[in-house]
Structures are given as structure tokens and as C-alpha cells.
Length: 566
Image (cartoon, rainbow, N blue to C red):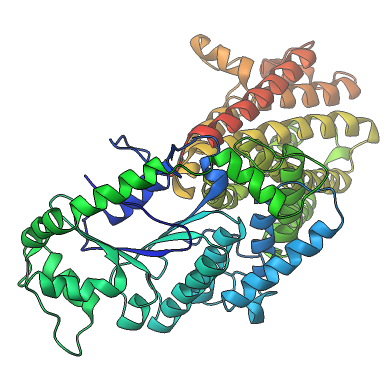
């Protein structure tokens, strides 16, 4: 078991060999551990409040999960606005802007404040700068405790030093307790820390807890002097790695139990006796310190109400979508081009009497509209990834993310679907009397399949599995639509599939309307397909019910599935 006490304004390094439990300890302290564990974590002598702890603490993980077309300043403003108390004063926006400017300066990001975050496909800031943006977002929450899991991993020595220097500035200027899991920093970086916690593995045990500056003399006093011109942190890991050539982990653990543990237990007891503010009192104090007037302090998991969350999420979604040419092309340009191509193929088909070619035309039209939202699944899965990280910090609710996404993606896809339908319709030369029927059923199908693909994207772990999961639904609905497999030819025990197939209802309604207009010509052909009149309302009800059900399952899947496991 590990025990200890940290004061505000400290920059703490948690170090040790791989497998010693550094990240596990940090996750336990940060209330991020999803697997069960024993122990107690106190804040100012009080047990952690599950509802309010994430309001006073922020966690920065090992991954930089942010939209590629986001700008640096926007990322910091996003966290600052969602973590601060709502304020009705006009000066609030200026205060936030001044605070963001100070953060950009502290983390060395002023020169790239208006540059894209970037990613694998988008050119943006460097990896070191992206890491500093992630750290700055954690600080932007104005938390009293900041947890950082290996913030320097994968960075150059210079970038790593810049990150730790920025964290030290934050700890001292804002009186924030900053706990950092760090593997093996160079000497200049190690000196920036106030406190050092040394762990060893097999199993995770504590070997040192105290000031960073006193660690070298302590290790020397235990009989393991640090040679000149040697990085002390390198030696610490050599001494604490079980099985290594210099392994003395058991001896250092025994020395800790004898030399430090009794004194540390006294410090913990004294800190427990002198209880400080509760999480609720800390929020009230922060509210008063910022001079906020108007609305009172919000006590709950989220600092701002739902409408304020949506007010931040919706502009972000709009901006990142408009800045991404691929997103616009996928939802509007591609359907328009496909409409022209298919319209050319079926040009003038509406002028002939109803027969097989017209049936194929309707089938292809409905099939293309059904697939309209399929290419969006990888994009939705990518957005889900950073949504999970942000909602784990209680920045906003999952429902706010879903609504913001739908308010942008659905209208864009709807414009593409409507454009494609109208272009094909115009090329085909069909009478205008068919337009309400064809457009109405195609848009009904669009909404239903859009809900299906968004649900699959919420359930599937990645893009490949999403395509695998969506394929059976598409195959069944495309087969049992009255053309490929008809009611007349399908086995009796499979007739129930037609009752739930949206494409079957849509195709049947359109074909019967076109046949009726042609005066019943080729009516025998339609009857051979097994189509039945009078099922339009049933079809509309089935499609609407399926759409609503899929939307509800979409919300539940985003809320409960694919959560971050630690």
C-alpha cells in the first residue's frame, strides 16, 4: 500500500521502472481507474465527492485527442468556457481571453495560436506543441489539481523541458497541485520538480517520498552514492528495476519502511486532522475569487448547463466541418456528381411506359440514397474518440455532442441526398406528379439509414468493424426489397422480413404510384412482384419507428459503450 500527502502549489514527479504502477497510482488518485481497487483518497481531509471531484481536478492522458481542423486558441477557449461558472457580465469574455493569452504565453504557444492542431492527414503544429496544447487545455479548466500521465513521452529533450517548465509556472502562479508521471527525465528537467515519489515493481512498492532535492543524499545515505556526472534519475531506475544489474529494489523498499514511512504516516495524520475546504466550498471560493455576479454557483457534474454546452459544441462542429474539404465533398459534392452520372445513365427513361427499366431505375435510386451516410462512419468514430476523452472530464454531456453532430451532419447529408434525387429525377424526365412520392420516400429512407449508420458508428470499436457490422443490415434490406427477392418468390418463412424492410415499402409505394399513373399498363408485371396497395401508412410507421429506435440506441451506445478503460 502507498500513502502520502501533497500540498497545493507543488510539482510532483511519480517515477519508477516500467510495470511499477505509476500510471495506475495516478489513475486511482484522479478517479479514472475503472477496475476495482482498495484504498481511500482524501481531498483536504474529505472523501472525494464523485459528483464534484472532476470539477476541481483535471486529467491529461498520454494521447492528444483533438479535431485536426481545430485551432490552438479555440481548443483552450473550449475548455475554459466549459469549465468556468456561467457569468452574465459582459466582462467575462474579456477575462477568458486574457486568461487564454497568459496560458499561450506560459506554454510557448503564442506564435501558433491561430494554427490548426493538425493530425495524420492535416498539416498543423508539431508533436511537441500538440502535447503542450493538451496540457494547456487541462490547465484552462482552472482545476485545483492537475494529473498528467507521461506528458513528455515521445518528445524531444527540449520539448519535454518546455512542457515541465510550463507546468511549474502553472503550479506556482495558480497554486495548483500538479502530479506528473514521468519515466526518466534528464537532470535539468528533474530539478524542476518539488517532490519525488519513487516506485518499484513486483509488486508496486514505494521506495522514496520526499523533496526532489533531498533524493540524492537520501539514496547515498542508504549506501548507494551517486557518481559525479551521472543523471540521478538514471541511477534511480537502475537501482529500482527488478532483475537489473544494479537492482537493490528490496533494500530501498526496506529502507523506506524504516526511515520514511513512520514520519510520512505522521504527516498524513496531521493533514487529516486539519481539514480544509470541501469540493463544494472550493467551487464557491473560486466563484467569489473570480468576481462573478448574476447566476449562482452550479453544484453538479458539469460547470455549465446543457444549452451552454451546445453553444460551444455546435460552433466547433460547424467550423471543423467547413474547414475540411473532404467532409463537404463527401456529403454534398459526391452525391451531386453521382446524381449527374446516374441521371445520364437513365436519361429520358420516364418518357417510356412503365416496365423493367423503370423498376431498375427506382431500385438504383433508393439504393444510392440508402448508402448516403455510409462514408461518414469513420469520421463519426474519430469524433467519438475525442468525445470520450472530453466527456470523461465532464466538459459536456454525450447528448449535447450527439445533438451538435446531428445539427451539422444531417442537414449537409440531406442537402446531398435531395440534390442527388432531384438531379436524377430531372435527367429521367419523369412527370412532376411523381416528385412528391419519390422525394418523400427517398428522404424517409435517408433518415432511417442515417440513424442506422450513426448507431453502428457508436457501437463499433473502429472503422473496419463498423463496415462489417453495417453490411448484414444493408444486404438484408437490399435483398428483400421486392426486386432482387420478391414476395412472390421468397420462402414463406421469410415473408416477415418484408414487413420490416424499409426499402421494400419505399419501392412498392413508388412503383405502384407509377403503375397507377400509366393506367394499369403492365399491371401483371407488378402483381408478379407481389406488391400490394394500401400499405403506405404501415410503411411510414415502420420506418419512423425504426428511425426513433435507432436514435435512442445511438444515444445509449455513445453513453455506455467504448468508454476509456483504465
